[in-house]
Length: 373
Ligand SMILES: Cc1cc2nc3c(=O)[nH]c(=O)nc-3n(C[C@H](O)[C@H](O)[C@H](O)COP(=O)(O)O)c2cc1C
Image (cartoon, rainbow, N blue to C red; front, side):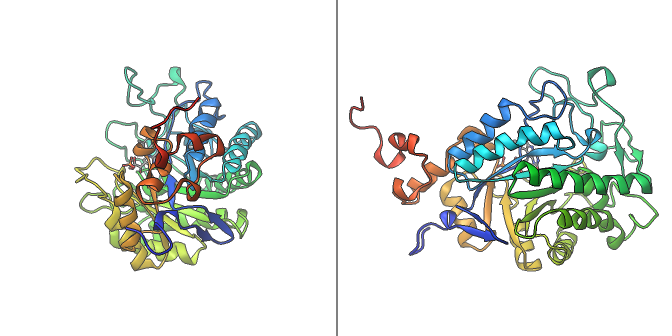
């Protein structure tokens, strides 16, 4: 569906003073491609993220990037806790900016789901032993994720240190040239572990009822917002539901999203699941209703993600008012220049689409029907 001003997917979006050229964004995706296990992004990350900036996405989000070494999911994750990492990210953000895209870093701490094997095909899965670079994970409570190690319960001092680590990583994100910070509070990682009663059994001020369970994530949000310039947007990725009885759910997600708006968050990236094993009714756009619920219920901008694969389908999400932007993960792996095909399918000419000059000869709306020396 198009409007008189063209497809909604290609309408720019401005959050604070940051404008995105379109509303088709690359979802965060772990690449497990730091063989040195030092958290420093490599040429793989430059090419992987850079190709999607060339391919016309409006925002390219990095994978979950750890704020401390023990916050990595696997030893091969990227990080943002030292100067070498900051420097390496700078090269990547500069390339992305040069393509007219915005860059965002997803800051993360894996908590009780840290220190696992990356699980590439043919490689082991499950907890990574020290001999493979693993460590002892921490979490809100000594409650293990099925099949993983029981975490060490975080002390009050651990919580203070972790808040500061998120703030320090945010300052590094600024130095590295990122336009957006997204806090990873979904998929059963540390901040989500605090939110859900299935993983947070604390009896102090950081557990118990809704207010107690959201307290630590809100402390992190406040510290990050303080460290992040007021012209740059802050996103939070939430799992809208644990898909499990007695767990985190949409009603609490909407309630938290209202608080996030009050605390200076600009957009909620609405995903689901990951905190406990559950049967998830997966299908096209299966999480879009959660995005719609947060957008209307909390009055905050949202991103929709999850099996959004076709241009018409993505356009419809925006036309229905279910989200302000769509995020693509697996479709973007298959097709780094998905937005360029979408532009053509939705009726834009190549001049109206975000083609790099060097790719114009491969444009979709002038398929190769004549000889090109
Ligand atoms: C290879 C891969 C790595 C992922 N890593 C992350 C991650 O680092 N952070 C995150 O929030 N989600 C991660 N996800 C989830 C995606 O961002 C997305 O929410 C999910 O794949 C559903 O979207 P899709 O149907 O477009 O793939 C990952 C997904 C894939 C396929």
